[in-house]
Length: 405
Image (cartoon, rainbow, N blue to C red; front, side, top):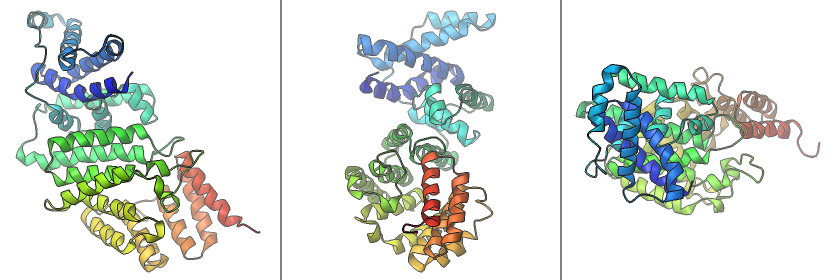
C-alpha cells in the first residue's frame, strides 16, 4: 500500500471511530466496523484512487459494516437495523474531530497498560491486530483477546464518550502520555527479539504524540514527551552496527545522528520549559538534550545530567531513574558513589538485567574486572533482546580474555 494512503488511513481512523461511537453509542461494534472499513480502503484506494471525500467514504463504509453486524444479532435488533438503513449517513462530518476523545477512551485508567497500548495502536493508530501482535512478539490470538477484553471492559464500565471533566483531566492525560511513552520505549529498546529497536513503533508513537501536541499545543508535558522522543530517536542511525549489533551511546558515531530532529526536539523543549511547572517528561528530555549537545562522549556535561537525575528521582521515585542516576553519579564522583546508589534499588529491580549490567559497568570502572565479568554474565543470562545479550556476552569475553594474553 502506498505510504501516502497508509498515512491518510491512520490519520482518519480515530476520526471515523469517533463519529460512529458518538452516533451509535457502541465503541466495541464501531471499532470493529472501522477496522473493516480500513481494510476495504487498503484494498480499493491504491487501485481505484483515493475518493474525493475519504473521511465520508470511510464513515459510510464503516456504517454499512455496523449495520451488517447488527443484522446478525438477535431479532430485537431488526427495527433498529431498518431505521439505520433508511437514514444513510452524510458524506462527511467536517465540524468535529473526536480523535482526542477516542485516545482518552483507549487509555482509560481502568485498563492495564498492556491493554491500553494494544487498543490505542488499533483504534487510534489504525494498526491491524496482526501488526500489533508482530510488534510485541505475541501470537495473534493472544493480542486479539487482549484487545477484545479491553473493549469489553470499556463497554461494561459505562465510560461516556466525552473528554474528561476538569477533575479527571490531569490523571487521564497522564495516562495517555504514559501509554504513548511505553509504545515509544518498546520501539526504542525492544524487550525481546532480534532487533535493537522497532522503527515502526517509534514512528507510530511520535506520530500519535505529534497529534496530541497539535490538539494541546500549550501543555508543557505533551511538548516535553514529544521533545524526548525526537531527541532520542535522532540517535537511531548510530545505535546499530553493520550487522545489526548494539552500539552503546559512548561508542556511537555522533555525526550520524539526525541533527534536524535534535534541533526540533531542543526547540520544543525550550518552549515547553518556559510555560510553567517542569514535569518528568521535560526533565527526561533535558537529560537527552545534554547528551545530544555533546559532540563527543567525553564532552558530556555529567554534573548537569546528575543534577537533572536527582530532580527526576525525587519527583518520580522510579527505581530505573535511580539506576541511571547511579551511572551519572559514578561519572561525576567515582564508581563507589554509583554503587552506593544501586544498593537502594537492588530489591526493587531484582531479576532485571539492567541492574547487573550497570553494576558490572561500575565495578569495571572501579578496577574489579573479575566481579564485573560475573555481573555482565548474569545480565546476559537475563536479557531477552538478542543484540543486547550478545553485547553483554562480548563484555564478558573482553574482561575474561583481554588482548595479549
